[in-house]
Image (tube, rainbow, N blue to C red; front, side, top):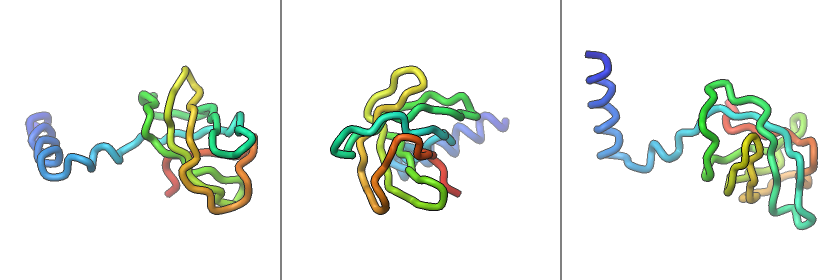
Length: 106
């Protein structure tokens, strides 16, 4: 019964808000391992994936160092535990190797 109810609720969400599920992404944490000279492309090594979820293009990371929020990066390609990303927003200091990345900030 519970599975049928879940399926019905998912069908309603898919029908009424098809893009809503596209924004759902798993909790992933990582470390910036490479930044191109222009600061537009970064490689994030995934260091924590508690749900063991498939890492997919389209997921976004918040990039930070300590308390300094530096911007956002969206995954374009994945190879094993490495996510290759395009920086989509930069609001703080330059993104550097060693910065932290996370998909969930709260």
